[in-house]
Length: 463
Image: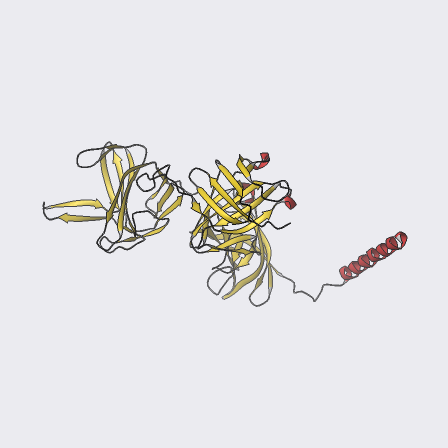
């Protein structure tokens, strides 16, 4: 019986091999159209535009005979990263996609006076050093014709400018408005600005920069989100008040630089300018705020607590309710499990084409990597460790694969605004896992600025 099994197995192998050989010998001529080669020799133009946490890199390449290729790649670094880019529509494109073409946008070939949108294929970007690029691939035009793309040349991207670091909160006031909203006024300054309290308020001195902002909120808290400019007296929730001057009739003089303004201070003398354009974003992780303005004229950022709005030490845990992914990572050679848990109102969905999670709505979620010897969740207290030193009783601190352009692995915290996530590494703190004995677990994480809690079932599929 054993000999018969061996013989039958050998026959199957021979038949399989002969079948493959016969197929491989079939002529391919006529089965598929031959791609037309386009050797692009010059970079006519390049742009890089931010789109939330992503960037759109547009290249215009030209051949010696004058044919043009417009390509729109999607990434998240300041430069075009190396990757094999797949097609996606503009509305759903993520990092690692190129945007499919239309008659006047996206990725398209222009030959003579005719535009051919590119609708499928793969374009591979290789990067040597800091700026030596090679772009190759086969792409399909909307008329069904394939083209083979080849370009080698230098494409230079400049790093993003660093924001002016606002390091101190100099003033916080909350003023109820007649329409029922609240005006939250913040003054945020650089390290060189001094604050001297007085009977009629504080005075500022020193040398440096400071930003004043009047946020409009439905309550007395500063919610995460994007605040847009509005004129004083015509604001609503989610606005900030544009800079303005007003005439103080009772005392017959003008008051300058109220609302949202940018000040340069030199030896105690301040020069102010109105801010009237651009959005101001507010992110919040635990008790830490990140407030950013970048309107072309002013690029500044404050990161830290705002004691008057969220007292340090009074940090209530964020209730997470939706464990939307649980995975045993042993198949990848890692003795860890991954748990992704979101707040209510955030709707995750997995995109198999891009191997990534996508979101609709606004909210928060955490991705946790815990040590597990057998792919199950064990009760206990977990402490932080690097991925290379993970052992029993550890959780993995956040890390990146920078060389691959891949970010926020391990344990990270994400703020999602209008479907776009922004992640930060978690590197300190503890995670407490309690087995409730009824098929549910309680997971409490205290990472300092971020404190979370989850109670519910945890089902980890076998890989």
